Length: 88
Image (cartoon, rainbow, N blue to C red; front, side, top):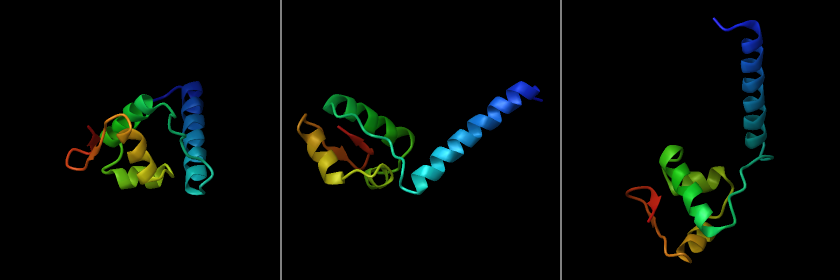
């Protein structure tokens, strides 16, 4: 069992995460993606690998334009491959 202090910290973390999730659902909170193209590539591919089953879901969840995202990554030579769910 968790000690009282550890339990309180754990509860605060859950409340913080819940608050962020509620903000996200209300449309008031979303992660800003990096403006640097190479950092953007890294973050997007990581999110596609770890969290999102396809690019449309990622774009919808992060309130990003799929077209703009694809254009920005195409400018550095990367194209979305839906079979492997990554920009290559």
